[in-house]
Image (cartoon, rainbow, N blue to C red; front, side, top):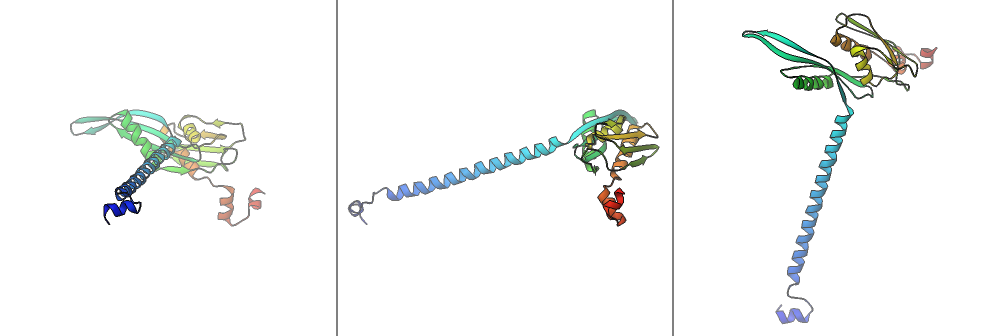
Length: 212
């Protein structure tokens, strides 16, 4: 079709070029929308990851300078005992060794998250039953308490119970005073706790028989 014929039929000479430009603009707009959505999704994932990290609390129980005898003499390093918990029924105890304090604490936090224990909590933020735990020469006894009692415990045992989210409990250390052994004994006591429903299921009886 010649130029006069196009003008006669109401078609501009630049119609095809303008249509092509419009398609390119739409493609560019779609690509920009996809990029913006991708960036917003990445930011959302980063925020969720930061929130998950912020749920965990870490407390350093003990930092000691230790030595290891090697061929050339003694190699000095630091050992950190760290308790990690989210105050919602999950807690762990970790140990880290490094040449500096920061590295030892970082390794202790990573080790604690590898050894998490799920703790059953009652509606009053206590434990359902009595628990006992032994580690080496350390022995720990924990008992449920009435609302308003608080955490009656000391040392590393108190740290473990608080980061587990327990608000009302009685605990007693019956053996060694070593912080690491006491923390691990408290972890064993918490890991052995069972709810009344789980106990009834294991014994094959009803909940009414458990309460009676």
